[in-house]
Image (tube, rainbow, N blue to C red; front, side, top):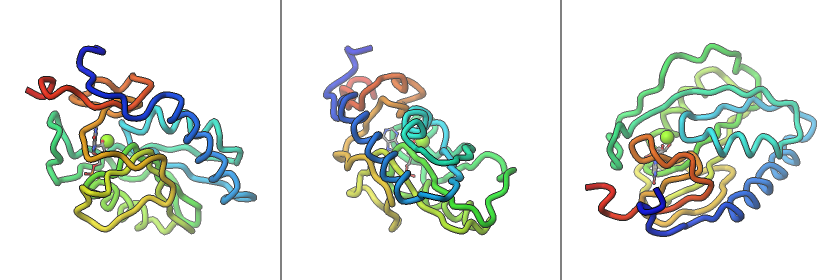
Amino acid sequence: MNDSIKDIIFTEEMIQKRVAELGAELTKDYAGKSLLIIGVLKGCFMFLADLVRHINLDCEIRFLTASSYGFSSVSSGKVNIDGDIDFDVEGKDVIIIEDILDSGITLTALRAFVAKHKPASLKICALLDKPERRQLPITADYLGYECPNEFVVGYGLDYAERYRNLPFVASLKPEVYS
Ligand code: IMP
Ligand code: MG
């Protein structure tokens, strides 16, 4: 598998350090409150699992599934959100956890979808952001790292459902895509 990797962009140590900082920041910002954490599957699974271990608050953890990529590395521009919200959102402090902000299409759709259910507050926490690729004006309230404008995999991020298990974030060799 390591034959497919071009460069490691964020090492395991860098990610773990930043995730711990984000958890501490959330713990401070939401002190005295309960948090409703909504993870966006599937890419968030590793980030969320590590992050919540650094959040020292009463947390309810839920998941939604969003997809726009299919098996390509280019967004289809259409967001599929699986199912409706079958849990209470109204009046809660909600934070959406996403792996990466790219065009912004997925999070814009998800944020609107969650906002309809009247949370008391609604924020976004993303591990990575590729601001150069943005098509819709959305930013993360909590961000791990700004990412170069390259397709990346690992730490939950996939290419055709592979590479999610890597403990770091890396770019792939061009021949992987062909
Ligand atoms: P957006 O809707 O274009 O912002 O894309 C968001 C979703 O696309 C993320 O949740 C990822 O699943 C996927 N995505 C965007 N960029 C990458 C990447 O570089 N590697 C893997 N998945 C990506
Ligand atoms: Mg995704």
